[in-house]
Length: 355
Ligand code: PLP
Image 1: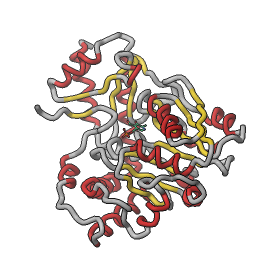
Image 2 (image 1 turned 90 degrees about the horizontal axis):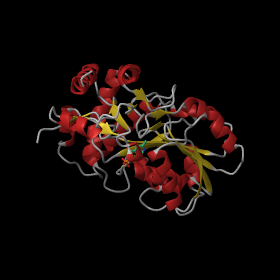
Image 3 (image 1 turned 120 degrees about the vertical axis):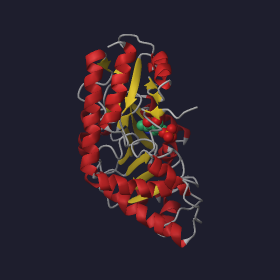
């Protein structure tokens, strides 16, 4: 079965060079070579995130780091901003870890605004807030800069941000925004295979973690810190993924962050323009994602059938997520995707749908 080129919002397409980096000979995770690898990766992640904070590596998908963030940084009660499948699920994770969690809920497709956050935090009930920057299920990207400005007015509230489908595609100046935990898995805009996640963790978050009981074992920030200071991880990490991350960060920095962000913005513009011409957009106007476009299927085409036809050309897009299946479909334009690929995809869909 030939490989299908992925235009789904994760896992995304991985270039051959990075697949090759996965196949480098293994090294021991207590060896000098590993320490050198770890020490190379960290400053590049700090550069990407514009942060002086430590950036930890997690051998887990992003859901594990959701758990880590709430376990280490929620003392009692957390406000969970909910607007789609993933942001909704982070609350479930908080509750499953014994935390009291309240919803700041909007309809799927709508954005969480700074004013909403301000009103909820003003209650004084919360010691942490979870925000998903880019809700992958609905194609909505919140204004993180505006939300950050509000959260900064509440210094006792830990600011926990899921940047799973925005990190490495959209500028996130972690220190300027005062983000305590900024997390992402690598199988989205990093364009690497699934299995590794990263998160910047602020000194304030580490101090707080020291006062929070039952942080668990695998995701305890203080244990991670102890090993991080020796350029190591507490347990055996996904070494191939770290080797690929090292290679990909070089390519990301060589492309240039500004250019990478501009490319994402340009590709999003192309897909949106196409979607508006033939369908409409699911996201609240003004909050359309830079990495994934969620198209409202208002002509009721069969998305499953369209994807079957695309599969014959070794290409795949994504149906709507969960309850949005067939009502929407999603085209991802993140990672290393280039203009010619998006134009080719859209032209192919046009022909298949008889536009
Ligand atoms: N957060 C967001 C915004 C996501 O899009 C996803 C998955 O698509 C997750 C979290 C969960 O990631 P994972 O399934 O890799 O744990």
